[in-house]
Each structure stands twice: as C-alpha cells, then as structure tokens.
Image 1 (tube, one colour):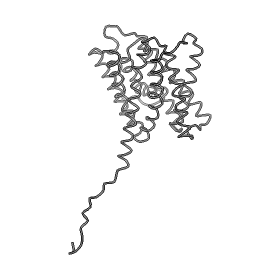
Image 2 (cartoon, one colour; image 1 turned 30 degrees about the horizontal axis):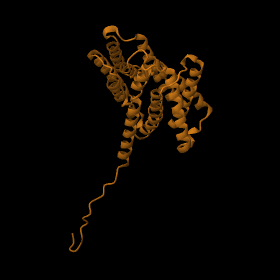
Image 3 (spheres, helix red, strand yellow; image 1 turned 135 degrees about the vertical axis):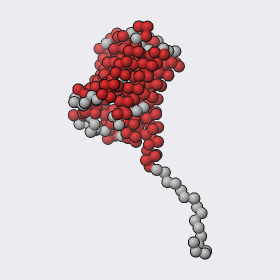
Image 4 (tube, rainbow, N blue to C red; image 1 turned 60 degrees about the horizontal axis):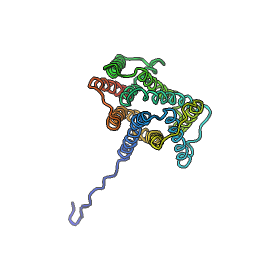
Length: 305
C-alpha cells in the first residue's frame, strides 16, 4: 500500500440473500398452514360431543370460508376470479371429492376419537400413490414396504381391546381415499391453473354442495349455540381460508414437495390438541401403530420430492 493511501475501514455490508428470505417466508407460511389445519379435529370433535350436528358444522364452515376467500381475492387478487369452462368442471369434480371426504370425516368423529381419526387420515399420501399405480406408475418394492408398514400401523391402532368403532375407522379411510383422489384430480386436470383460482372455486363449490345437502336433510336443522359458531368461525377462517392462503405462499416459496413434508407435523399437533383439550389417550401399542403410519407417510412424501 502506497504511503498516504487510506485503507477503507468500513465494515462490509452483507446483502440479504433473496433465496434465504424466500425460504424463510415459505417455512413461515407452511408452519401457519399446519397449525391452522391441526386445530380442526379437536374443535370439531368437541362440538360434536356437545350435540352439534356434523353436517351443520361443515356446511357453515365452507360458507364462511367461501365468503372470506371471495372477499379477499376480489379485493387483492381480482384476476383469481377468472377461469374457463374446463377449469370449472375440474374444480367441481375436486370439490365433490373433497366435500365427500370431509363429510365422512365429520361423521367419523361422532364415533371415534379425534386423535385416532387424524392418524388414520394421514394415510392419504400412500393412498394417492396407490391410485397413481392404477394409472400406470410402477409399484416398487420400497412402496410395497411402505404399504405394509401403514397396514400394520392401522391394525395396531384400531385393534387393542376391540373398543374402536370399525364404522368410524372405515369412514376415516374413506376420507383419506377421497382426499387422495382430490389431490390427484387437481394434479391431473388443474395443474395449469392458478392455485388461488382453484382454491377459490373448489371451496365455493364445496359450500354449494354442502348447502344443498343441508337443505335436503331437514333433520340437520338446529339452532347453533355460541360455542358452535366459535368452532365454525375458527375452522372457516383459520382451518380453511387462512390455511389455504398460507399454503399458497408455502408452495410458492419452497415448493409443494417441501410443504407436503410437514404433513406428519400436522398429525402430531392434531393428536396433541386432542390429548390436551379433549382428554383423549392412546395406549403404547396405538402410539407404535400411529408412528408406523407417520413413518410410512413421511417416506412416501420424501420419495416424491
């Protein structure tokens, strides 16, 4: 360094890495979505145990979510309301599958505990892969091992003491099948559409479908209590509207594969809320069975990355 030349002693300013910022945003959105979704089983089970009709709960939840999503998107994402006829038909099919699954799930909660129900529901990634196999995707030995783990897990979860209602278990399995179907239908027929647009119309169609069922089934009419409306507002606002918007952000910043890896975390939280707020308990055999199901689901999700 020449004499008289001044050395720059200012510390270098480290520029924020855009990738790291996006990743952090994605993780935050995913955590919000997982937390909001995990609230549903315990809240709905508590309301049903208090004598609230499950069809009423689900119908009002979808109506609230639909109104909120339309309000938010028309104000901030007006382009999300634009869709063609093919997309509408696809959204209707997805909504039929999703509404059928949720109706089965809500009905199942009248017969079995929320903790057991949600652990069984976490089979849906594996069921989705089985459906893909029927469309020609090969079933490897590893996938068959995952299937065996899941089946053993379900047996251990529902067998102890023979106290679990098998009809309730069957309804949750139907829920997982319908949910896997709705995911695959979305992938097969709606992947070229904006996730915001798909969510807006799927939730709207679900609200319409459930409203028709609610009107046809006169025996579901009842005066909803304040606590029931609290459950409806929380599940409609948080578990449906906020959860879906947060999920969009997570998928945008970290991708659908990384977002899906948090599915087991949602199940663990759902079981935790059921234990804390409903007083539910799992035997050690059921804990092992549930762990096998979660392990199977986690392996399936990782293999899809």
